[in-house]
Image (tube, rainbow, N blue to C red; front, top):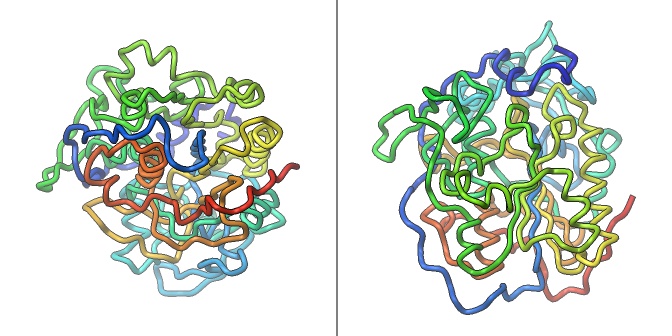
Amino acid sequence: MQKRSSLSRRSFLRRMGLGALAVWGSSWMGPLLEANESAAAGSTPIEHVIIIVKENHTFDNYFGKFPGADGATSGRLSNGKEVPLTKALDALPVDLGHSHADALKAFDGGKMDGFDLVENGTYQGYHLGYTQYDESSLPHYWAYAKAFTLCDHYFTSVLGPSFPNHLHTIAAQSGGGSDNPEGTLFWGCDSPKGTLMPIVTPPGETHKVFPCFDFQTAADLLNLKGLSWKMYAPQDPTVSVNPFDAIKHIRESDQWTTNVVSTRDFIRDASQGTLPNVSWYIPETFFDEHPPLSVSQGEQDTVQLINTLGKSSLWNKTAVLLTWDDFGGFYDHVPPPQIDAIGLGFRVPTLVISPFAKPGFICSTQFEHSSLVKFIEVNFELGSLGQRDVGANDMTDCFDFNQKPLPPLLF
């Protein structure tokens, strides 16, 4: 199990025993709202938005010790004992449970005291869920936080694992999905016949459906406005979550070839100054920071991306929104607001890296993965998809578009 090269992440997750979820992760599946026709692009200096989605860490796990942030250095166990958050290993021995069932245990009705009860949260007597990194562990992420903007109240959209949360990053909903599809390594329209994913409808009824949806996404809004987009993702669907695989009208169109491309194309496009208006970037598996993999290797991959942007012609018109998809089983002390039956989920680290990000700023506005979609909509004046993005904060609190542009931070 230590050799990730011979064991896909999804296979690894299956062995960790991810449970079924039973709650509603999106608030609406209605039609596309009318797009704003007033401009070909937005009214801000930002012409390129890059959304980087990493894997499985909470805010307290990465930034609990960050000066001035709403972080914690200790947490409460299920037996009521307060324990310190001990130093985390760069690469853990095992993955931690992060299904909806695990999240409910950890959440414990808002008590935030059950992270030792998630799968492998307590491993061989050691509370892996109550560990954290610091500046020496993640020097580059901390440097970005000091130079640009760190969000300390950014929550996942679903109290659960990767797949439904990734859907929120492109569509501000998950089709009601509340957990990863069951019994397969392929998540989306390419799943084998008979694959089921648990959802809960707005009235509260639980169902299981094939994980291929046809709701609208931010990409559709961009298409309507004549703006460009790409999803940069690993090409092996068994080792990475690609949410556009779950959108039928994209998966079965030419856009699957023209707009859904290899992660490895990003560096080329960035260095040549040919990135689209909106890029979603999902790292190759070995760099996604998903336990038990090395967080420092994942950090170096991110640094390579930011360095490339910083050295390119795109820097002065770009916003990078760097976040993590789910809590990964790790402790966080802030109870997530419950805005529907399955969300919000726990806080995750989120950085805004841009020449127009407020420098050295800690933004405590409440955000979630749907806020990424909202920022795209607002920045490019696209209109809206539905109720969830309309209600989400748009992340402009992280920016000062009138400031002198910040220089890139290069390593």
